Image (cartoon, rainbow, N blue to C red; front, side, top):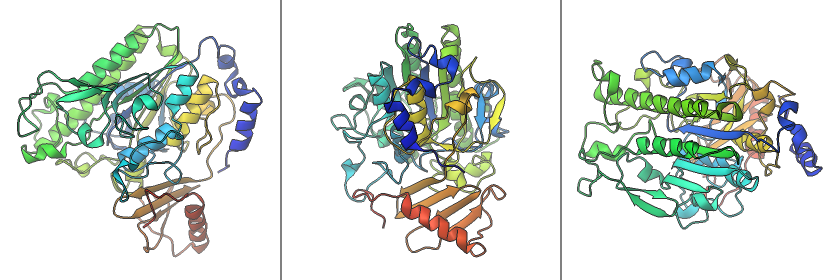
Length: 467
């Protein structure tokens, strides 16, 4: 794979040729009518969780239609195998060998889970470019009052959770609206903290807020909406007082299925997510915004095995090995779809390899502004079908829970370092997508190459040391 030259891209931008990075028909109208951008992120939705990715039991007609009308990616990668670092890569354009937050927990200090002032997010870039920006849902990159709070990182509006632990409770007593706590009607204060009497489901509020935000856009300014849903993440705290932690108001069309209760609820969570993605796309169509709006849909990592959920029951990982917290494909390869009527030709299935850190560069290119230096490559040529699409030489991940684990993909090869002191595993991931055959002993030169990448792609971090 050919490595993109960031130096050349940045030099071109500095020379005032940013508009030339856009396809010609977009460049002509770039200043007058820059595209809107929406990124919808699911939480712990596996590669095999959607009908368009082979799911047989769970109904996802709206997202399936989105895929049929746009591009469905088969080699899209999350930023990490868990929430916080994956979202950090998505927002900053840096992979987990370079970004600030490299795990859900730091062994050094708790406030390590906050972006600092010099961590530039895609929202900051777009906000400075004149976009109206909103974050609705789960943040996880800085509490209110910290440098990483949403409105300190480029969002004009924020409604949702800042703390990841709080985000897993679907019936919270309150949510943040900007810097103020907004009590939720129907979610009474009582013990146990998770109670069946609570009636206000946070996911439904996020959809309501997203539709309200979109309904207020009048075309005078382009907008960026980051809709970070929490479905279908488990609420493990709920398992203390309930049979399982797959928290949803009702089981919907799955109530009559002869499945374990946790699996019925898990399916209902995904179908509820699907319904509301459809509502967002429908509103864009109704308001005449669809043809000037690029919408991404993806998941932050592979499927979880928490709260009673069983990834094997629905084959949530698709054909891949592993799930959330694994560095194998099941933990990091995710469903991803791009939708832009009139620009993206419908019915496409792309095997182009890309990762979350490509999104900020892509968004900056759309806005016609310089992207901060990072690890990403713009996907505009791929999305529009115009121009040459550059590719990555390597993809790198690291994960810090129970020690530093690493993975690197280069060409057809994928290497996994399970932990410090453990032997590196090597897979020909194209012909062995399930990573069943460790061929490290057969290709010592590829092992050596992989070790070179593992060293090269990692910068040291005081908060996430390699232990």
